[in-house]
Length: 212
Image 1 (spheres, rainbow, N blue to C red):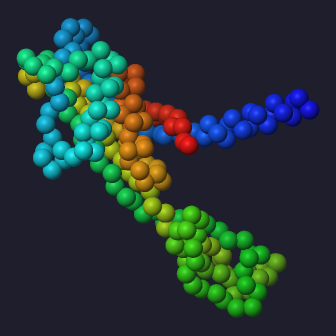
Image 2: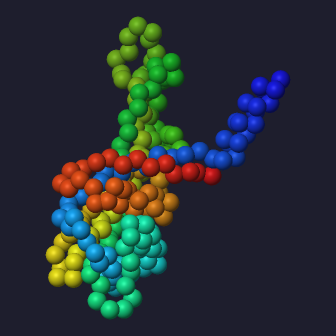
Image 3: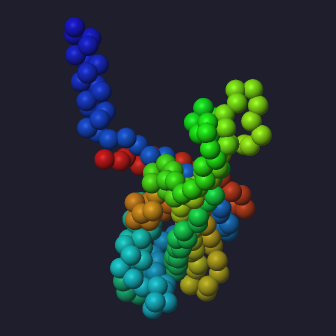
């Protein structure tokens, strides 16, 4: 009985705590980072006016937080040693998904062709065999649906005061999550994971985001 109570409490805690979503990003870094750098003061380069939105400023704060953890200091006055630039894009990508349909679900009397709704309410169009034969059916049975995925790209660069590039990182992520604000903290974290990281290679970074 005690064991049953303990298991029930553990499950309840898991449900209350929510579940975790794995955010996978492909991170490519190129850098010529100095072995010793004394002055880590920096300033953000101003983005184009049409990009300087509240959303942009929110993600800029995420970059600011990661830089602070690495010992960088934002300079409000004077001549900073470094200049930081950031840009991001989000692109909606429709993906065509073909899934087989079991013959047992085919209509045994007539050919049915028409609009359907697939998983998660996505529009789908089904193609069905005109009859069901347990040994042979001349028509393949499958369902075609359109799923919307979202391709995100984050770029961060660091230059010295003479505009020499020291660090360029690009983060790519593809997911079904339509909310960029929910995903962006993980992308920014991935950009600076193991800073400055290996140069000229792509690596996969996986982070857990707690949902609920």
